[in-house]
Image 1 (cartoon, one colour):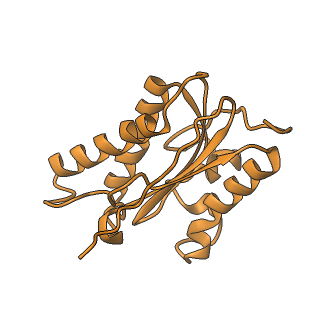
Image 2 (cartoon, rainbow, N blue to C red):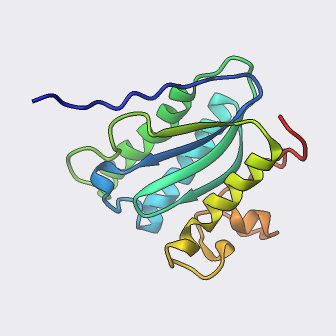
Length: 171
């Protein structure tokens, strides 16, 4: 019996933003608790500092997460950025008793899409932030705590501040 392995080709192009999606193993709702969501936010914040990228949007859903980032360095690795986010979440989830045994994340690189126009950036942000509303988890995007929507709506009580460098013109 052949086993299918997903191959993810990444294009680390200077100046491009990246819309990244990564899912929990078996699509389990391992990110359903505020504690697990906070782990993602903390890992994203630490990775942003270490890997030198701007965060333009994010949303943590019960079984997956979306982030929109733009690397600041001309030479970067999306794989390294994902590793810097995902590995600490899995490690600390186990250490804090939020997950026991087995994989935390779905194997493979997740979904990565280069975003090269201002219009596409704003469409990605709208899509990500609208995810909890479409799933009927809240009424308005800014009501979802673990999302960038509250920040962009002018809220100050946010788990993670966004980098205010979202483009008005193409990248």
